[in-house]
Image 1 (cartoon, rainbow, N blue to C red):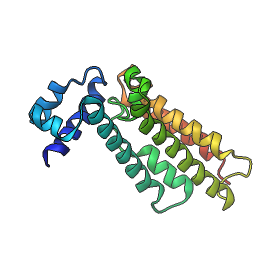
Image 2 (cartoon, rainbow, N blue to C red; image 1 turned 90 degrees about the vertical axis):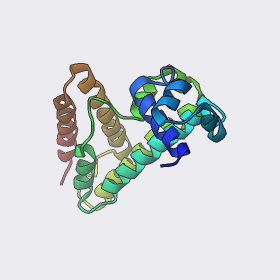
Image 3 (cartoon, one colour; image 1 turned 30 degrees about the vertical axis):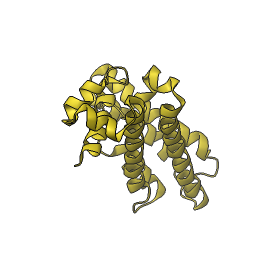
Length: 187
């Protein structure tokens, strides 16, 4: 991994662990093994590096989600695969946790990839649910957009509840509940 990639990877980890304010240039340099000159050679400063790191986290989230959404099976099976895939529930979502960071949310450039990722995720789920409704797998009365929004909210809320309880089981129960509500609409 080259220096630029090490800087991005280290910043991603630190943002996930400490948030924006807790992610100092010195901590990034120490974790990545890069010197100050290397950091400023590749990035204009901490905001530029944070934007690259957030963008990378968002890109990876989309890639992992798309692997399940575009995989084999019915719509409900693909959504189930996405919701049940292995995650570190106690660490939280690397993109979702950024919504709790006031410095990220206050900066339009840093906020944009977070907002775009959740919009993409909601739209992608809504598209799958509409597909399931159109092919007769799901009830015609199911609202794809409202249901997709609720699924994303339960997913992110499951992380919050799991962290609060210090129990990944809480996250699993939240996913079980969401899937129970969804499968009630299977025809």
